[in-house]
Length: 386
Image (cartoon, rainbow, N blue to C red; front, side):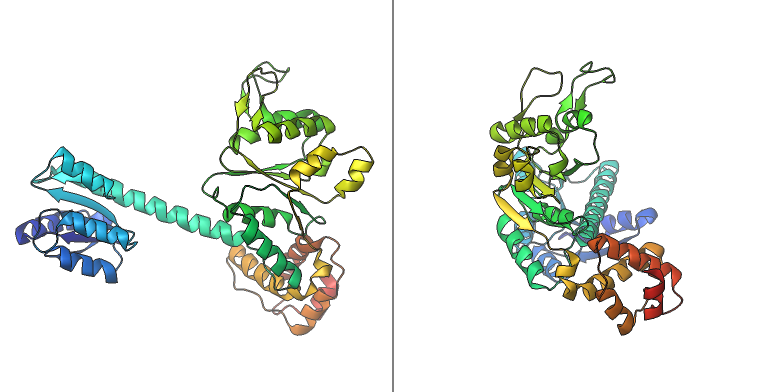
């Protein structure tokens, strides 16, 4: 159901607009009216509307003032302005003040309906996008109350708004990607892309093409030009996961990209400017890798402006109960089922496990327990399926 507010001082025009909106059965529109700008603004302050059809010339408060005051109060409603005294200057003023569109009285019926439908469709898409972002944000939320996690969250709050490069260290499955995601979501780049590259999963002969792209004909299988991850993440964040597994040749090119903010595609000659924040992660001891000649020291210093160490699960056992509760909720949603209960003995048994696979292993075990256990998850289930 869409809620639309008509702000118009002429009762006859309000009635016509109301009838037009009511006739659009597929849109399911609920209409409210206001006889002037003061009444309209008062309704906007106490209720949520998807769309406002607002006259401009009205007594007590004109439509532009209603629009400007609504925007100043952060009232997130789409305005379509209507006026019998339409001029280009007035239309420009309305749009500059935040109106979606400007229509002249009497409005052409087809244009009015198209404008209304487009505005409502845009709102629906914007709401869906907001909900999707909220779900993504919840999916990558860092769960925990241990001192180690609290310290990581503090660092994220300080570092995220900057463009400082961050190196995230920690064992496999400990949640390094979650830290990288949070750094992006809380940064000024959050509206742009977060692009992830798993350096360990890409063969060394392909990693340069993956990162920097290639030109058509650069090698046998290069049948068309390809844009690399550095370019895809332009304006956003590039997450180089497991960077300790990157070849020395690719490391040299990454170093140059970080130094100059420019890349060159494989097989290409021209330099391409990129504005990409790089966050890297590894489960390896890079200082040892440097000594062994497998990692460039100069690249290490470029990447490690800020170092965030993610602890293993056995170093933050006090967070296990919170993580289990989160996973049970997520699994229930995923299966469209009721959230399973778990008793205290089972929780204690899980807390005492080794968890060599860290959080990733814990999540897999919880899914197994949800599927295999009957009713409440108990200690016997843990012993049987851990």
